[in-house]
Length: 130
Image 1 (tube, one colour):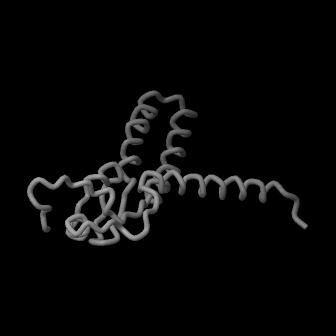
Image 2: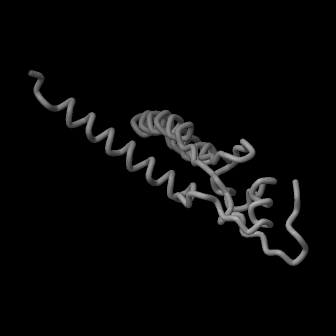
Image 3: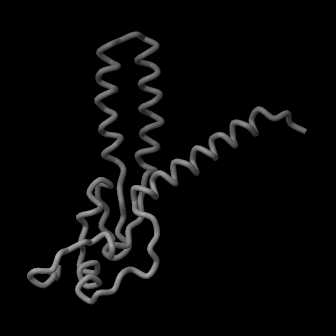
């Protein structure tokens, strides 16, 4: 990996091309909600505590993917990702072509889309069939 010249301040956010990937975490979140429901219905405090701690495993599955180098990493560390292409863009003074939303905002947008789809499916399910 090329390093920026000495004295240069690396601000990789301006030069990164990243995509958020919340779907694995969402799949596990559904399973986690089911396990938490069963633990609460059983009124088992130990099971509730264990399932509650497992929620941090769900959060660990929020990832980003770099479109330049193919690296996948934990979403909360996207700001420090600086692959060779990112460093080269910074050294050359070229920002990325399309300045889309940050990975964190992408996850929020995906959650809105998924939430709207769930609501739409619920409404369609309640509608009488023709």
